[in-house]
Image (cartoon, rainbow, N blue to C red; front, top):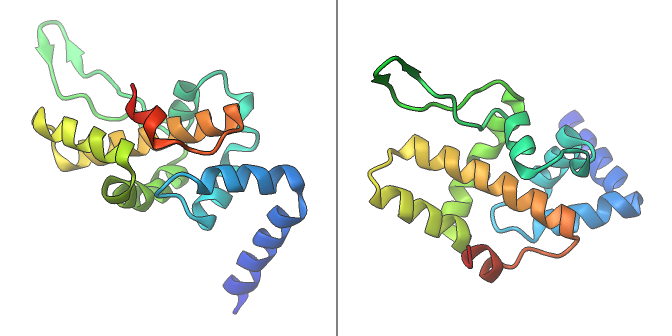
Amino acid sequence: EEIRRTLKAIEDHIDNDPDLRQRKELLTSIKGFGDQTAALLLGELGDPLAFRSAKAVAAFAGLTPRPDQSGEHQGPTPISRLGSGFLRSRLYMPAISAMQHNPAIKALAERLRSRGKRGKQIVCAAMRKLLHIAYGVLKSGQPFDPKLALAR
């Protein structure tokens, strides 16, 4: 009951603020993002346009690569995990969903799979791509267009 009231309060807060409502509508235009994910991004990132770039947003979430090398040794490249673990954990299911339903993320996953990447690497790349798309949508003020994302 308390969780339901809290979710309702968050939803009401977003709906009563025209700027937040518009940002939520832009974020939910991305296949894979629902109302809860949009609210989470709006809460965690604050004003996403305060970030210099989409790469800075990915770094904030800890989804940037961390090189593992020393001398001639070149190990696998994991994610940095320096950012918000909460945001990273909440982007997992939207990334899984987007890999099935979002043409841009689906194409990314197929491309990485054909290069021999493992499942977790593909999901992390999908999470990062979703953040890049979200930043682009919020910065441009235009709803997500899969044709533009696939053009790259």
